[in-house]
Image 1 (cartoon, rainbow, N blue to C red):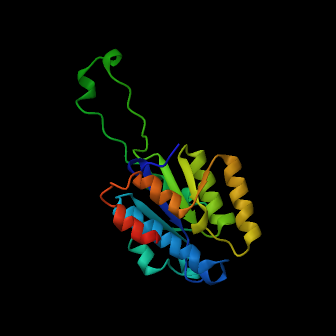
Image 2: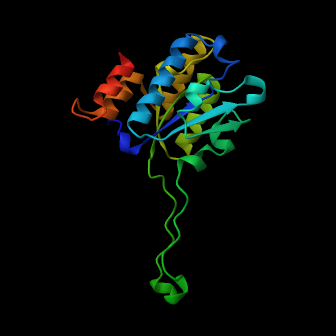
Image 3: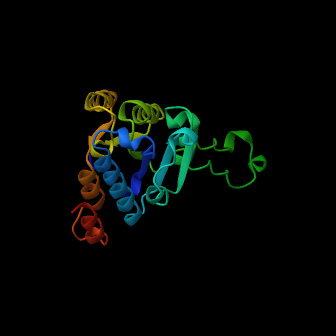
Length: 201
């Protein structure tokens, strides 16, 4: 199974000013997050950010924030608990017509709200706390979750890698920034190929 840009959304978790200096390989992790956001913009993939307790940890970098459609300020470690899933799923569409004009046995049941884009590509910090809990909550919400490992970080490698082991066991797909790029593109004939290729060179 490959990623499909038309079915994907990107979630970037907590790349915050006071957190990133403590993250193992932090500059590379942030650089890959920015690459992901710029690729998503080129391919029209909706992009969302989160910030954990921004009054204490600061905001995400401005260049990352401006690539996100919205940024969720949260206190829970898992962003779904603070409303992320509501952003990822479109609002329920009203049933057309006057429901009272038909007898009950002819009325169609109201459609359940379903995500138009069911795949969530997610990356962030810390991998074993906010990223892990957000990804597990998204899996519980029945999204297909793909974790971009080289855009995730923790203060230690051991914590980061333990998060990846647990996420893989829970059903998340583990990928890299370049894997996401080339799966979203699928072909060198894609109109955005050169723009995306330039981001990963």
